[in-house]
Amino acid sequence: MFRGLRAQIVLWTVLPVTLVLIGVAFTGVYSHEQAMRELVEERDQALATVSSAQVRDLLQTRTAALEVLATEQAFHHQDHATQQTLLAEAGDMQGLFAGEVVLVDETGQPASEVAASPPWTQVAPLSDLAGTIMARQEPILTPPFDTAWGENVMLLGVPVHDETGMTYGVLAGPVVLQDLGLETLLSQVQVGEQGAVYLVDSSGRILARSPADQARSSFAGHTGLDVALQDDNAGATLCHAPDGERMTLAYAPVDYGDLGWRVLIEEPWQAVIGPVLRYSQFMPLVAVLAAIVSVLALYYGIRSIVRPLQALGQQAERVAWGDFEATDTSVGGVQEIEDLRRTLDQMAGRIQSYQRGMHDYIAAITKGQEEERKRLARELHDDTAQALIALNQQLEMAQKLLSKNPDSAAERLVQVRTMLGQALEGVRRFSRDLRPIYLEDLGFVPALEMLTREADQRVDLSVHLTVSGSARRLPPDLELAAYRIVQEALNNVVQHANAHEVQVQVRFEAEHLVLSVQDDGHGFEAPDLPDALARRGHFGLMGIQERALLYGGQLSIHSAPSEGTEVMVRLPYPIQQ
Image (cartoon, rainbow, N blue to C red; front, top):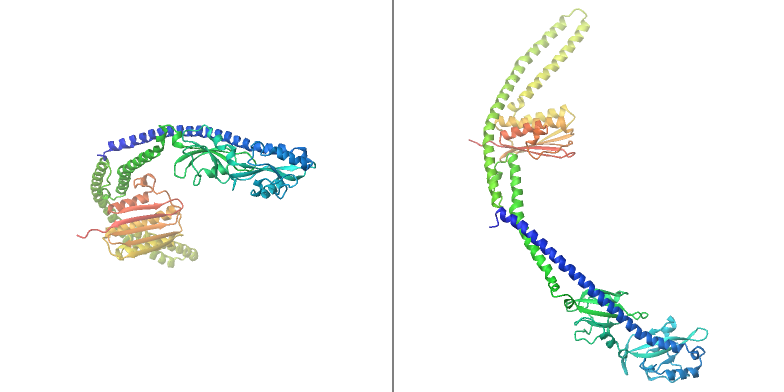
């Protein structure tokens, strides 16, 4: 049902329109999805930025409290008694710290002359904190660490300067992560029902999270974590969770030194987009299926229309070159193309029948021409040549009888004799051209050897003859036609090719005599069809084509500018009666 041209036209028109409509729908849905994604990412990024600023404020509140205490005159003048009083009054800075604030030296040891060491100093890494602050001269908050008296404890310290500006100590206090109220802060962020807010450190470990049921306990294997940790600015990305679910992840760094904390806001993508947009994930599948169907239809169309038409075109070209049996083979495809092939086959049969009649007519004309040439050659050889010989003898006798001015007369007679000899040789060569004597006496191959030898001697051209296969004698008319074909091809090379070397090949194959004349001349644009030879003025090649067709042969021409020319003729052997 699909072999008809109408069905093919429907397939080739409906399917592209369907694909265009699917593409337009997909583009609209995709554009809407992109706009929704940008809005959600922009909202979550703003929320993450605000939340990171609130976390920073919590840390800066404690840092500012220590910095205010460190600016007291007692610390500038190193008044130990007053320092002890101030530290005792400060205590845990009204609940900002998890223990009493302490003054330590550059080694991390509490100043014993100021106050007794609080219990927490025995398990805290004060030496690392003090060394870092003394080196960098700025407040430092250590990463969380676990102790026997508390989990996720951090140390916050600020440098203490004397009246000369030299740093001689560090005011430090412990901060418990849970005491910061981060979960309460994060739970106040207004995200979707399935969204969650996290605070992570520089390694991606979760420090705090909003108390949501869907909040994850680890970001291991999350594709968006590396993006969030490597970006120093706030941003958002579309990524995949460890279980493969598509997620939106907004992030913002906590601007507190080089702490490296990030606030992350995560929402499932399916919860963000609308119900209609959720089907957009199936659009690529629909597009792929439509593309597959279109490709199959296109393949079927190419196989049933384009390729059969190409094959039919090749058959038509072979018919144009004389292969009338080329259209016998079916090319397949739609019914209209097969009908066209049958019509072309019928036309080829009619042309072949017509050419048979023309062959007989041309053969009769050619035979008459050859008989006339043979008669002229015989007369020139038997009459004209003999007369010239007799004339030459008479001139010799006259030369001996001259008595007046014998020297001048003898010189003139010698010139006449020379001219008569040249004329005689020309008449003989003319006779050979009209009817090649070697062809009748010696055969086809020796005649070609003489022809190529004369061409090699007459012009500045190197001509080589190669004969392959089992040589055989052919009917005289076929040998003459083959001889004339090679002769005409050599004449074309001499007159037009401007070549230096010519290869003449004769192959006696099982069913054909193959003649090839190949030169290294400047070449030309070979015509696609034989009827173009006459239109372009290639009358010599046209004559070769006619001779080849006369005996059921085929002519092929291979040439291109600056690449030489090869003329090849395949002549079938006559059928033995």
